[in-house]
Image (cartoon, rainbow, N blue to C red; front, side):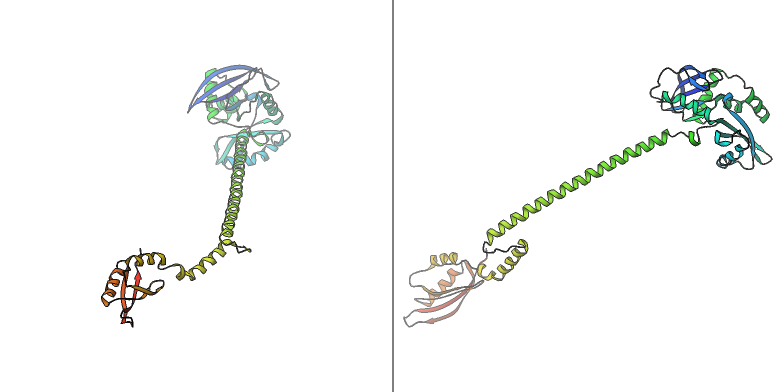
Length: 359
C-alpha cells in the first residue's frame, strides 16, 4: 500500500495528513497539528517512515494573484509567456518569484488566466524547514485555492474569496487534499525549485544498472580471457605431445617445424609403397600350402604379388596336378593351370596361378 504525506498549511497552524492509498482509494491514517513560524513549518517532532510522496498545500495568505488575458489557451505557450507578463506585474520582476497558472475561462475569444505566485525567498524558507525532516514535496499546491475555484463561478466572486475566503471544515479539507494528490490545481515546484527526487532515483537506478552491466562485462571478458589462456595452454600441451610422438616415430629426423605437415608427407610416402605392405601374407600362405603337400609334389618357384600368386613345380602325374588345383581352391580363388608338360625325369611340370581370398 502506497503511503503519502500531505502537509496542509493554514493561516496560523498546519496539519499533517498521513494518507494511505490502495488503488484509487485514500484513507487518513493520522493527523498531526503543527505550527507556522515566520512562514516556515515548525513543531514536527518525529520522522515519518515509509513515505513515498509528500505534498505541500499553502494558504492564500502566502500567495499572490494576478488575472491576465491572453489570445490563446495552450498551457505550454502560456507558461512560456508568463515570465514576460510577470515582469511588469511583480515587484522585482519574474526572477524573484515562482509562479503557475490556472484557467478561469474565455471572454471574447481570449483566455482568462489566474496567475498564482510566491516570492522565491519565502518558498525557499518553507522547503528548508522541511529538508531536515527528509520531507521533499513532490507538488506545492493550495487546498484553499482549490476550494475557491470549485465553489465560485465569476471572476468577481473568485477575487472576493481570494481576499476573504470561506472557512473549510476538516472533512472538506481532507477531501480536497485527496483531489490535490490526484491532480493539483497548481504546482509551484518549477524552475530552480523543480522536484528532482524521481529523476535522481531514476538516474541512481541507471547508474546502478550501468555499474552492474560494466561488472558483468568485466566478468565476461575475464572469463573469456581465462578460457583463451586455458585453450592456449591446452594447445601448447597438445603440440608438445605431438612433437614427442612424432620424434618417437621418426627419431632420425632432427629438424621438426610442422609435425602435422611432415606426418602427412610420410603418410603420402607410405601410400606409394602400399604394394609392399598390402597383399598376400607369405607366412600364412606357406603354412596352408605345406599342409596340402603330398609325397612326390615339389614346388620349385613361388611368386607372390599384391593380388596374384604363381606356383611352379612338378608332380608324378597329370591327375595330381588336378588334385593340387582342387586343394588350392579351398583357400584361393580363380585357380588356373596355365602350363603343363612332361619333364626329362618322367614327371609332370606345371604352372598354376591364383588369387588370395579376402577375409
